[in-house]
Length: 180
Image 1 (cartoon, rainbow, N blue to C red):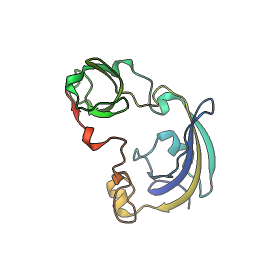
Image 2 (image 1 turned 135 degrees about the horizontal axis):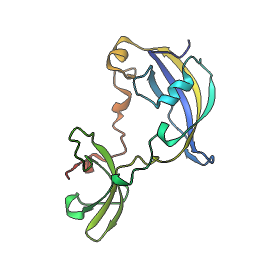
Image 3 (image 1 turned 180 degrees about the horizontal axis):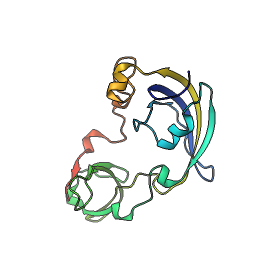
């Protein structure tokens, strides 16, 4: 079966920077619904479209095609007392950046520094501003179910969303809204 709209694609992958330094080995394969549903990066979909089981490729994505350019305006210094305790570098919080645009989406802010009564929060994706190289190997292609097409994402064999494993990199205890 060829990869096309409304196919579920399983891809083993590794991710490195443009110099070949490994960022992530991809211990678990990526499984996504193909066809413009924004379940993976558009350039990955483009590279796999029309391919078949066993296909291997390596693609390099510039920041604008991956996780965007680094935006210094997404780095905020907040008073320590506005965040929960205990607080450690690396913790993440949901929040809305300071903006005149009230429809702006929430971002994940990462604590990058703590000093006295101030905390530095960075709303950039950790891979923003980096050219990335993906090594991809297609290990399964199947037709999507009607339910997957309707919901525009893959369900596991139990009918759960693939994203529902609750491994979002954030400890629920620290998940909070940062109010500006």
